[in-house]
Image 1: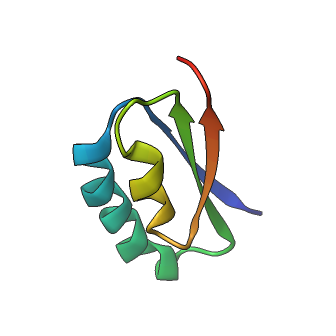
Image 2: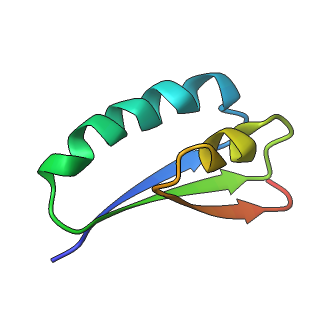
Length: 64
């Protein structure tokens, strides 16, 4: 079984790092886990911030 965390994000530059930091803390305790951040056309640095966490997969939409 695989656990998927799907995190929708739209202009969440300021909130994404704390959330992904908390997810990172619990990852070692979980079996087969993936973290997917869906950036829904943000105009800020949301996708860039998500990329700073190597365990994330990013899906990026061009427009909201």
